[in-house]
Length: 242
Ligand code: GLN
Image (cartoon, rainbow, N blue to C red; front, side, top):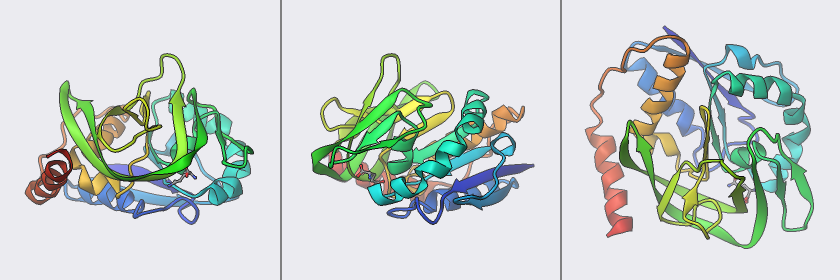
């Protein structure tokens, strides 16, 4: 079996090790005999969202968001239908903001977003930086995610839009309401860099399982030996929540 994973704008959206998320997805596929087919696409390059299993959008500064917005808007219709069709998307920070209605920079100027999810972002006076621990629900049990955030944007969710999780340590979406990220259909938006997936193998597997389920395969993923990953994860949780 193959899984098609696409890193969109790898040259513009890739901060604080974001590319490690692609490496983690690919490694955890390979370790189970699933072949990851990695595709990269940037400005002006052709893409077929319908043939994709997982789309990854990393973080980028305001400058990069401004550079890619026109190209991204050109892809809005196709991406929207793929998302409504269950495409698995992981989007971090700048990429996460671009899925929403707009990002208003500190100058007051707005960068238009795709508007696929009813969220919006406004730059605050102080940057929200540091390690984060977030509680999310996976398979009906509460688990933690660890990551690192660095953003000035404060993101707000429209009515009925669910956050990804609850902030146990750090700032999250806006530093005010203890909410972190967004979860809409199979789209996961978050401020967690780090990179997120190598630090949180459980979450990585959840994305892989969703992608496989969409392909019609409901076999559970083979267990892997995650002792080292779990130790690293626990060490961060312990340090931050002590
Ligand atoms: N430019 C955005 C902000 O500062 C995103 C930053 C990022 O992706 N780390 O809010």
